[in-house]
Image (cartoon, rainbow, N blue to C red; front, side, top):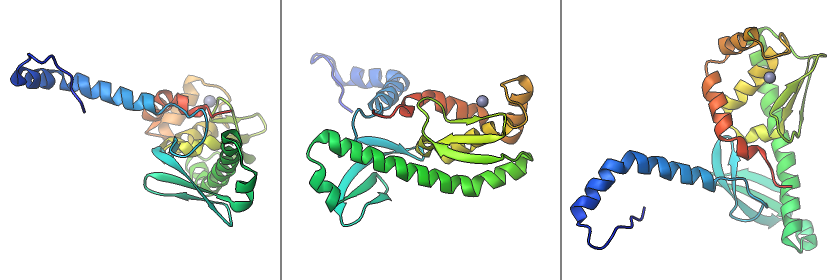
Length: 212
Ligand SMILES: [Zn+2]
């Protein structure tokens, strides 16, 4: 952190000022960090992206076969040499990464749901007739009157405890197809993280928008 102070200000008073303002400063630093995590306008090398609630940096590689590798700090996207030949503009690269990330997120969420949905269904005692993973522009999931649940594959950007809240929320719609008091009390009964998850989603609403 860099502190700018007037040259005539004695060091001691700078320190005292920082100490007094440290909570405020910490808050400002956090806010700035969050502002930096605005969704990317394009997918490219070095661009930040959320994966399971953690911010990763996109790293692009080329090899014989396509792959996505989740590392500590990076989301390593390997495109094929065949693709590389056709990618001449940054717009084309952006679209290639977007398409590939979408299919990766879709597969990952389908796998997560295949293990987690039966457990949560059992716990609540509500069973969907079908479930599907797709893209939604501005929602995480949905439930219709035929008992079918649909989930947004961008859920893979959320921490698992928030994904679980979304799953429980949609499962509870199998009993109440509204947001009544009864609905919310059912959600709260089965998800102790409800309030925190709603808060997390509100704070991270901006990551829901993906570049066009
Ligand atoms: Zn709802």
